Length: 84
Image (cartoon, rainbow, N blue to C red; front, side):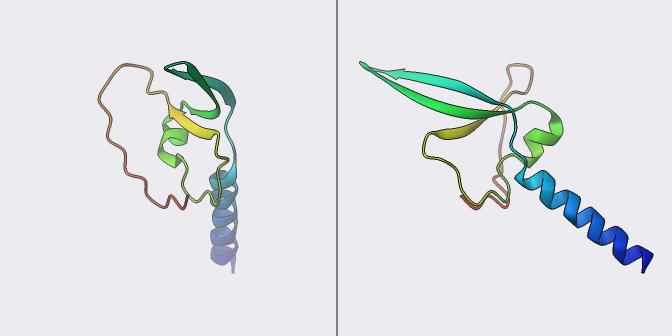
């Protein structure tokens, strides 16, 4: 029974983390004469970067996520369990 309760608790923590939103920042992208405004979540820790947008059911049309690796580098991404 104790093992089952531990599993349930771990699953609940995982689900909570999966739906937690990160700190947001405004982002403007200028293209030609137009400026497009976005609200982006900032993934800065290894855990946040690994989680990314996994299990998100929805995302606003003007929203997104930026991944800050702390340095300039080439990065590869696999969008595992990304539902949007």
